[in-house]
Length: 365
Ligand code: ATP
Ligand code: MG
Image 1: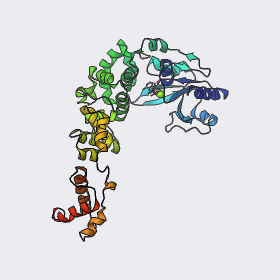
Image 2: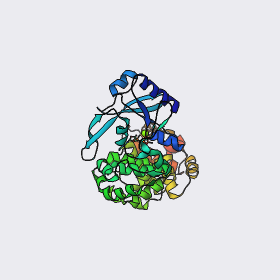
Image 3: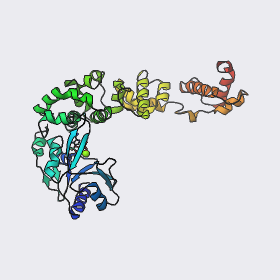
Image 4: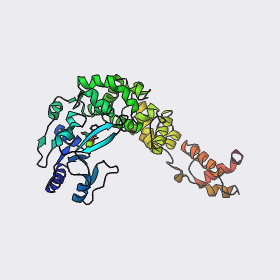
């Protein structure tokens, strides 16, 4: 990964610009942690970059990052910039491209995120990032109060890095969060959710949740159930537990999954619950209740059918049997049969199921 990145830096430099790896990759590399993506900073503009890399994906917004994927590694390349005037402390209103690496580093959030690597793999540390990395400390570049006033998301990023890296927050950062946490209310729920998701997906998420509670961010972020949380494995399980489906933006799939997890929690080993909610939601719900995945999977495997397709009769066969035109009433029959089969009351055999329909004709129109 690093070698591919260094070649990329060399290619940008050959074209007459400066380029460095910056941010998460260098930080994690020095800590011996693997990264998934690489951020590059350069004085080449997006337009210049598109001339250098023919397959570069232009930024969606005017000042966005240029993305390229080499050997399946995603690279985000941003041009040295000075960001100023944030509107409602959301996104920078105006961005100015600049020519100085140091100036570009100064607009970033934490010292540990300003360490760079040049094309020879040499570490360039202009703002004392390595000192804080060794001290395992999250420290803002500027005064924490003004840093968080400029972009309040940084408070959640601080908690995310402290959680993921098992670092402590500097005294200044800690005090500034207490003072400035009210600003989190002005952030969009999308940005908050994204950051919380990273905290919840961390293997040490318990520590992250503890930090959120220590700062009483549960009140500000409308996470009323956070203090009762005793489950830390899957982030979607944590969201399901928090019951904030209407407060944060979730996709249709996420909502469906959270509903299944909550439904499954009511009677997780019940065969019909396992059947309706599926293995994944049942495993998440099971974990919350203290059942291992193996145990849930064992019960799931015992189900006589795992889906509607495996049912021994089809709707049109029932219609034929009852001398009726196919219609919506058939799905009621199918649901009834599924339940009876899953609960072991009926064998999944065509004859048995059709017989059952005949005998119980009066039950469904
Ligand atoms: P990750 O491991 O999650 O990728 P990262 O530190 O690389 O962590 P990114 O969100 O990828 O974080 O951002 C890349 C770099 O951009 C950061 O290291 C930091 O220098 C800078 N940065 C990102 N978000 C902010 C912000 N809200 N304020 C200031 N600087 C930021
Ligand atoms: Mg990154």
